Image (cartoon, rainbow, N blue to C red; front, side):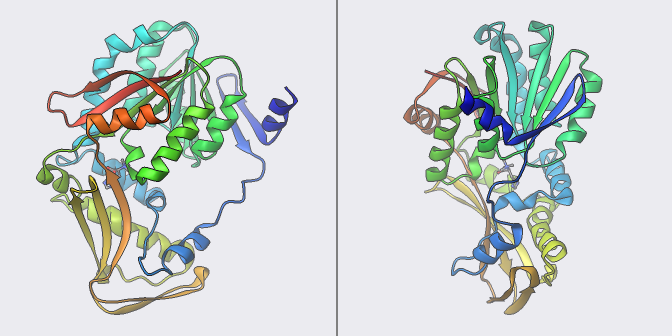
Amino acid sequence: MSNTLQKNLNYKKYVIDNRLQYFKPHASRIEKTFAEEISFSLNRHCKFISPKFFYDKKGSDLFEKICMLPEYYPTKTEITILKKLQNELPSYLDKNFRVVELGSGASVKTRIILDIFSQIYDVVEYFPIDISEILAESSESLLKDYDHLHITGIIDTYEGGLEFLKNYDEKKNLILFLGSSFGNFSPVDGHEFLQKINSTMKKGDLFLIGLDLVKDRQILESAYDDSQGITAEFNLNVLSRINDELDADFNLNNFSHHSLYNEHDQRIEMYLKSLVNQSVVISKSDLLLNLEKDELIHTEYSHKYKLSDIHKLLDDVGFDIKHTWLDDKNYFSLTLASKI
Ligand code: AVJ
């Protein structure tokens, strides 16, 4: 009990009104800054920039555009599968569930789940967990459209937020992790992350994860290199962000978007390719970066899964798999699992 109290003392509660509140850690944990992470990741033999840095305002807008591209099937496909859940999800829920989402859902997807909950419960509780403050924006619009919705935003990392929730109360959680965001993790990190999720769940809690499936190379590659060049813009934008926030002088014309499907490792790999020999100053990271012509900076992995991979993954960390739903073309999957 005292443990619970102490844990929650690390968060400050902001009550906006009787339907909206936030929890935010008092002092952010000893996390590295953007400047430090970039200094580390570009100062190595194999240079990389973490995909989490894609999502500044411009990057988030570009990602929204990607989701609507004809070539980018994941979002559309996941939405069709979620619609199928309308009839089936309720049978897995009892009277005591809330919706928890990793990532804040401004999206259609969250709304489909909230619609399902609205049919079952008089009051629907939604707990988005996100480090970004855009939580506020998306919450306002959800509250406008759902009369019986109560939102508690947790402004923290997914792991931090889940740990907080572990001691919060006795209500059961349906944890959503949609969009194949999990695909960014390396297999080792992914395993660790799922273990973390599992360890913060109470018996009977549910986890719904959306994962992209292995398919034809051509379909995969065009999803990550679209004809309008939006994905290229999205990838290159991370350099603009470094220019703006870390006082750097990347010339975007000297780089190109490079992506490919690595069949052996079942993943899309995205890079920024240096088109010339060049030096770039990143002031706030104390870095003079030398790049050779054709040198690659790795920016993202997007792993693709077979159904057997998904079942093994969840099985290995001790989840009880309830059901996997697919679309007609077997492009994408949603898997519901519970804590044993
Ligand atoms: C947000 C990680 C799921 O991997 O498909 C889209 C990001 N990158 N196009 C994905 C992304 C390029 C996306 N995730």
